[in-house]
Each structure stands twice: as structure tokens, then as C-alpha cells.
Amino acid sequence: MKNFVLIGAAGYIAPRHMKAIKDTGNDLIAALDVNDSVGIIDSYFPEADFFTEFERFDRHIDKLRREQGGHAVDYVSICSPNYLHDSHIRFALRSNADAICEKPLVLNHWNIDALQAIEKDTGKKVHTILQLRLHPSIIALKQEVDAAPVGTKFDVDLTYITSRGKWYFHSWKGDEKKSGGVSTNIGVHFFDMLHFVFGKVVDNKLHYRDEFKAAGYLEYEKARVRWFLSVDVEDVPETAKKEGKRTYRSLTMNGRSIEFSDGFTDLHTRVYENILNGEGFSLEENRVAIEIVGGIRSQSPIGLTGDYHPFLKK
Image 1 (cartoon, helix red, strand yellow):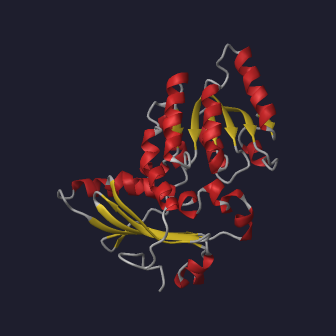
Image 2 (cartoon, one colour):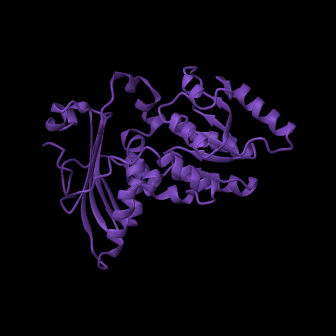
Image 3 (cartoon, rainbow, N blue to C red):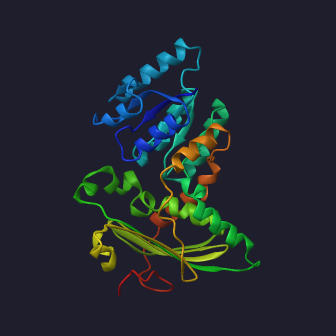
């Protein structure tokens, strides 16, 4: 049995990590969150120590490490706000533990280089949650693309609208300096999935960006991709709205819909199983997606020119 600690226990995604730790037969011994609304822990690890201040949490983990000969914690699971991931990964490695970090791993690609140096210094590893790479529909899509004749380039449209209320823009998620903006916060895992399926990035253009949405064009080795990401409910298609839906997800390839809405429930557990078996996703495997979102943030939108997504209206 491995010992885990969790940073960011009150967040939306934290219960999936708690479930994965429990499902793999391991123990959560401590958790941290500045917010104390973490009753969900009782469903998984009611005996876990809990802290709302990083300084006290740090002291506790260091005390355990010293009392147990330098090896009290095996893994630090990180579900904190995006801009804190880099710092919390460093804490994990320097606490003689491996890190398991949510997406985006970091906000800037040069942070990956620094973390690789710390991995080398400490002998510990950084793993990340790239769960779409384990989704059966995405694996099948990759196999189809890989089997296509050499030189084949597919036409792909990616649309993801996950509407958010007014709270979103009062939280760290609505602050681009902390979240990376819409393209980073809700798009990075899709951009990684596209890289996983279609290969290297050839071109990256930004057509539109505001605080609610972003859209652009990515060309991969094997695909031309028009993408549209939004947290604005007004972008949800009318047909979906009439069904009471506030979220819309679509991936088409050469006009054919690729269904991957289901099958997410156990993917975090699958990722944890792979990590525990020595097959987790490494720092380097995050680089392309982090470079993509960094490139999007650094660009000025070119407007509705070229091959833009059909959800953009003139």
C-alpha cells in the first residue's frame, strides 16, 4: 500500500483522485485546501489529516518524512489552481515523493525544463493526467489514423462548450494569469489528445479570443483542425438548449462524428493504475500541448480569415 497526500482537496476534480487512490488499494494520509468544504473526504478517507494552511501542511509532511527515515509519502496528488501546479510539483519532489498533477501540468513550456532538472536532482518523477489518451474511442481513432495511407491529412472540427455561471469569473479560473485563459483551462487536454492522434504540430493560428471563448486553427502532421472553445451558454446550439443541455462536445473527422462523451468515469483510476505500474505519462509528454496553449496566449487574433471554425459568426 502506498501513501498519498492531496493538494487541492476541495476542487471539482479532487474526488476523482480520491476515488482513484481508494480503487487502487492505497491510502490518503493528508490533504490540503484553503477552503474547508471537503466533506467528500469522508466518503473515501475519513482518517486523513486535513490542513487549510500550506505552512502547517508542509511542516506536517516534513515531520512525517523525518520520523519515518525520509520516506513517509510516496505520491503527492495535485489538484490546485493551474498557476500553483509548478510550485506544488516542486514541493512534492523535494519531499521525496513523486507528483501526480492535473492538467495543465504547467502554464509555460520552460517550466517543464526546470522540473526535469529537479527530477534529476531528487530522483523522483512527475506524472500527469492525460486521460483522453486512455479513452477507448480515442485509442480506436488513433489506430484508424495510423492505418491510413502515408500522406493522408484529415479535416477535423473540435467544438467544446462547457457553460459556466457568474462565479467562474470571480474565481481563479476567470483570471488568465492564473488559469491561462479558456484555451488553456478547458482546451489543453483536447490539444494533447489531437497531438496524440495526429502527430506533430505544423501550424498554430488564433482567429478569436475573449474572456468567454477562443477559436483557431491547428495543423498537425496528419490533420487540419478548426477548434472552438467556450464557457458561454449562448454558444450552445439551439437543439441542445431545447433538451436542457448547457454543455456541448463535438469532434468530427472528414464530416464523421467521433463519439467520446461517455467512458470518462474510470479514466483517472486507469491513469493511477498505469503510474503505479511504472507506465505513467511523463513531463516530456506534456510539452507539445503546453507549447500549443502558450502559443495561443501569445498571439493576437487574426480575425475571420482563412479556415476558421463555423461557430464563429461574421
